Each structure stands twice: as C-alpha cells, then as structure tokens.
Image (cartoon, rainbow, N blue to C red):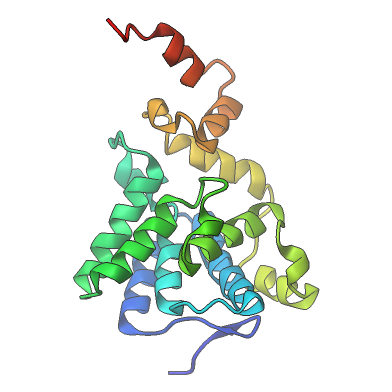
Length: 214
C-alpha cells in the first residue's frame, strides 16, 4: 500500500493506525475528524521545525483521540471530556500492547491539550499536540510553517464553512450535561459563550462559600 503524504508528512499506516482511523471516522463528526488530522500534520511539521524527537504513530493516536470525549459515547460522563478522551486513547493503545510509558505519554498529551501554560514544558508529544491545536484553532505558530504547507493541509482536511461556530457548538453540546467539569478550564468559557445564563461557578465563589475551617 502506498503511503499517503500531506504537506510532505506521511500519514501513519500501520495496522494500529488504520484501526484508529476507522474507529475515529465512525465515532466522530467529519468536523472533528478533519480537525484531528489537521492537528497531527501541524504537530509533525512543528516537531520537525523544532527538531523534537517523537514517535509519529503515538502522535497520530493522540491527535485522533483528542475530542472523542465530546461525542455521544460520553453523554453520561461526569468527567472532564479531556480525561474521557485520554482514557479512551490509553485503552486503545493498551489493546495493541503498547508500553506503559507510551500510554502515559499519550494520556498526558490528550488530557493536557486544553490547559494553557503547562504542555510546552512537557515531553514532545504533549508539547507538540498542544501547539498544533493552538495552530489549527488560532494560527498561533503558523509563522513557523510555510504558506504552501498550510494551504495543502487545509485542502486535504478542510475547515468547513462556519467551522468556528460549529466547533464551539460541538464542544458545548458534549459538556452541557457536566458543567461542573469545566471549572477552571477554557471549557467554562465555551459553555458561557453557548449559554449566557449558564453559571459554572469559579474558585473565588467556592472559597468564599466554603465553611472550612470549622
């Protein structure tokens, strides 16, 4: 089978990678699936530009599983969606006999991808996935990539019309049943944007309302 390349980056084609691709294609919306694949290519390009050694296959699995936690599979979960996504990635990798170290790397990368200020100080897979998410969403590190590469990525895995609002709506719908899980994260802002009347609460309110110490 011929390896597929996007912007010069080979898309992993092992049995595990193909299984993950099919699973995520069947589980996620096209909007989330294409965002995950863009994120992978951005992450690889950023890794190359920064000369960060990493396992492309683990990076691919992490990218694909980033947002499975907001799908219908987790409509009854009360955990942060990032934890559900990280747990799902870990279970998948365990099924393919990957080491505890490999699984821990991917778990951290997925769980921390929405936590500002920490991923860049972690090992390459975590740092690269976070940077790639920021690039896909906000163009944060786009200046490190050549315009031709960006256009090829977007042509292969396009952002559909109205992507920004649709993406925020998708994230919100996956968390409306567990608003408390968004406390202290960017997801609280996502829910507030979706519903101005939703009160997630915050640290200051919790501290002032606390009865501790007795």
